[in-house]
Length: 109
Image 1 (cartoon, rainbow, N blue to C red):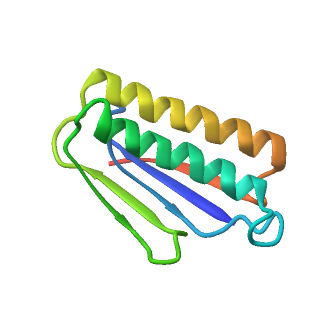
Image 2: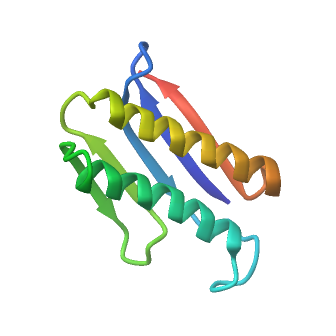
């Protein structure tokens, strides 16, 4: 199962998010659920860096299964919108393929 955790302030401002594990929907190289989750999360990070120039610190595991992204400063409104879009995309994947492959949690800090 892939687990995505989003840490937000009480006001809903994202401070960090992480993505860990493989979905196990299909064998490696054929897992469309894992590919979809990865595409959504990595695209969000790329847009935060390349388009919005957000101050973030990201670390990736060598096997590509784990990602941690921390905001180093308050994200701009567009950055928050991108994170909301990531959450929306993850919700649609979870609805389509099931909670046994993808779980995400929003934690208020």
